[in-house]
Length: 103
Image (cartoon, rainbow, N blue to C red; front, side, top):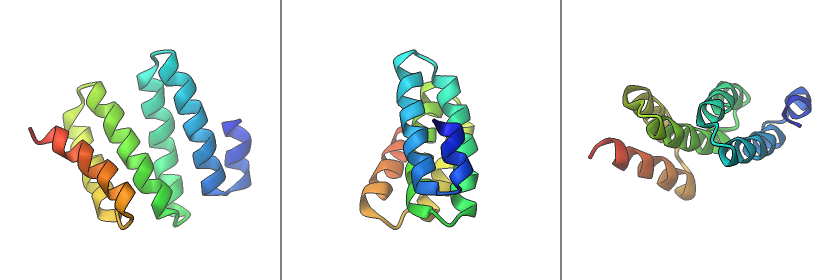
């Protein structure tokens, strides 16, 4: 699970475990728990230099913060994600969340 993936120190493996955990939580309507899992992962990915997964994590985190109506926090996450978004798909994910926050 996620706990063992974290022990490996591999951000790609940990990201896969985060996504699996996220999918489990979403199916059960536990969006706040999704925010917690993703928010915990994001700095770890950044510290490990795994910017590609950090951008996707920022997009996912922004999406769930929007669902919860936490717009000020969403704005911060979107800005951070955009600053890292060098990959076209990742950039599109974060920009999509940004467009929602600026309507």
